[in-house]
Image 1 (spheres, rainbow, N blue to C red):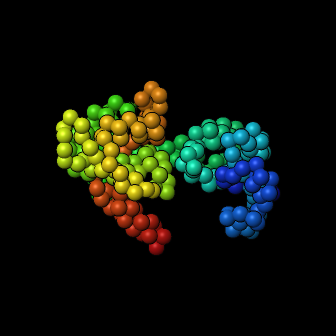
Image 2 (image 1 turned 135 degrees about the vertical axis):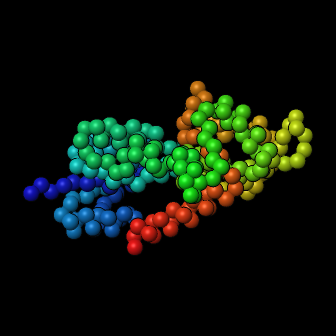
Image 3 (image 1 turned 90 degrees about the vertical axis):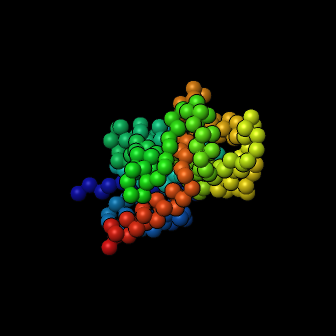
Length: 232
């Protein structure tokens, strides 16, 4: 019987890669459980400057389990996702495949399911120009929560509320999920954040989603209850 080999991949640096063993990391229980099933597992510490040696390693395994956040200290998964697609195309099983994440593991799913029981008034900006044109009118109707399509740990999440004042230069109160509240010109806010949402051509990169207040908490509550239902 063939003994399968799995690589467990997480982000680190060259020193962490050299020192990694199945026992000295936060995923050590996964190594133990796979070993109990007769599956050999090895660490695969990833960094952008290690991509060639990580590629060579992944091409020799039967599967890859990936634990890398969408955003980490200003770094994205763009190069990693390209690598994982390349590896998967040659045969090894990749979990989760980047294309599956783009369909199910992004905020865009809230827009696709906005008419369901957990849904709310949700807008999707596919271009920077759409965000410039549509966001001011939505803010006139009330506060919005702006979210990147991919993110974690509160990164790329802002509650934006328009302030009373001049129509020629609208001001907004911005509450960053990872920082204190700030006050800024609406035009400057849009200009500052479209670069992280859209590529230089103004097309969707990680996406900007606008939610009315309360949508995220309501969705999370229903989703947790759904998970509890599945496990009972």
